Length: 208
Image (tube, rainbow, N blue to C red; front, top):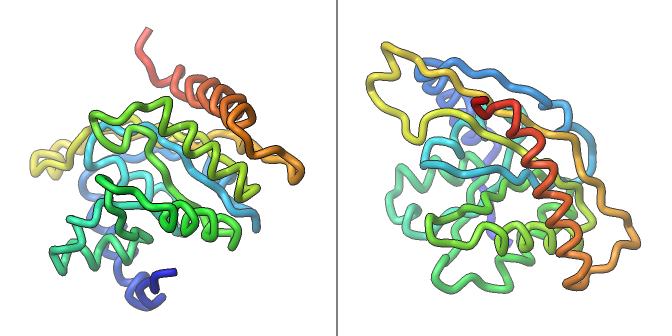
């Protein structure tokens, strides 16, 4: 498995992230207690723009959320350092490998929290990606934390003067039994349960 940045560098990044984001939005965080515990968890969240990974990571602090990021982002030394410091690791989205999936499973088995966005790209099928998250959870025997983000798609300069309202909701965990099967049918059932849980926590955020 790929090495991550040292804890001291990660702490510097977290401090900078907290100071930076606190000036660009007013955040309401619900259900953060569902991230606690020794068990590995997969945090599955909706995805509307490039800002929501930052806000979800911010909302999970002091927990670290590991997440997959397209390898092109690591070509810039500064951006790459920030992503690694926040728990990110590179993947080739055009050719996702079995090793990447095994890496995610290993992180969950080690008790880590892994952040997955089913809508990883604007063209990716959301249902298929949710089934992927369910399959990983079944193999790792980790818990799933359905999560909802409500806020701006991007971070803009105007937000310094007119801070937008942001809401991040972590739902109750979906526990995977240790004897749960890992076949396609089990993944489909878990995907349906995940869909229902994500819709339930998103409903209070939707306008009537």
